[in-house]
Image 1: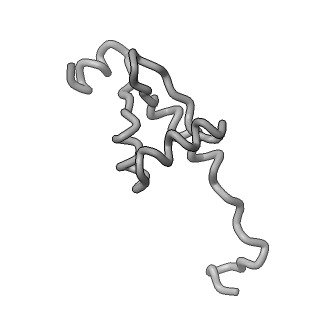
Image 2: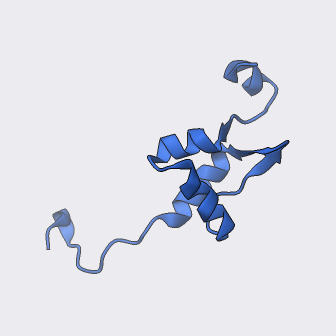
Amino acid sequence: MNREQLSGLGLEPMLTTSELADYLGVHAQAIYDLRAAGRGPAGLRVGREIRYRISDVKRWLDHLHEPESQFATVGGEI
């Protein structure tokens, strides 16, 4: 099934660990390590593989967002 067919069924596209790692620019092992430490994105086990809902990845990334530095000023200059 392609993404258009999945969308018609109301199913959200999912990423494999390799796809997520490629998107983030890290090795797949980094994703496995984060999950093992309890700091990775929520995933679903499908057989032997883990899949990640795009909405779960976005939520996880939003929680990783660091607040702006206390030294930042208007215009981004210190």
